[in-house]
Image (cartoon, rainbow, N blue to C red; front, side, top):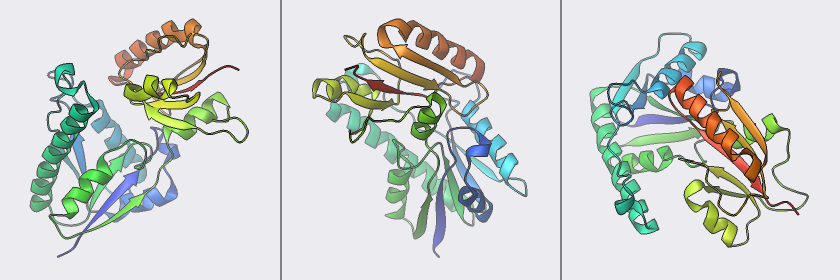
Amino acid sequence: MTRRIRIIGVGPGDPEMVTLEAVAAMRSVDFFLVTDKSGTVKQGMPDPLVHARERLLDRHLDRPAVVVRIEDAPRERRAEFTGSDEDYRAAVRAWHDARVEKYVDALAQHEGDAGFLVWGDPGFYDSTIRVVDSLAERLDLEVDVVPGISSVQLLAARHRVVLHDVARPLHVTTARAVMEAVESGQDNLVVMLNRVVDLPGLDDWRIWWGGNLGTAHEELVAGRVGDVLGEIDAARDRLRAAAGWVMDIYLLRRVS
């Protein structure tokens, strides 16, 4: 029997930024598969993003949500095993494969249609579509994707900036690849997935940074890179202390 899987973009954090299409999708499924990273963050600490998803469901569903928590598979992050791009991609593939196994087991134990809640938009630096595609190779699934408002859009709105100059491109990348992009000539970048914000040699560039956008603990910093990196580090520390997690993003631009 065909199972329906709905991958639902739920925006960057504010329940009011969930689209009407996403609300309808959430109300159409029987249960939600939610990865719980409690075992991979600080020992003994609950995963705050699970709680955030539950609050979002409470806000938008017209019935109690059925949330199936799945303990996240361990992910290799040690530098000696992820230093090269090849090693990093291999570690991510292994992590995704382990998640697939856990989702197969969960679907076998629960009947009906399932939903995945994805922060921001499922098409921006998120693994859910790839993981569900692997699931669909093993199970009879009907899959659809509901887009969401991304932190890229919200960053621009919060700082009241256009993400690119007139007729100029925008390069979207990750912290891991930002310096490589700059060295290749990119001078207008949005950077996601930051473990730290470290921009050696770019003191005179301009940065518009946002952390935990769309949440009660949202932080914004903008200015010359060399002048505000300390402010960004302090804001990241405040977010981690207040929310238990940090999701940040920034626009980086060379000043002509």
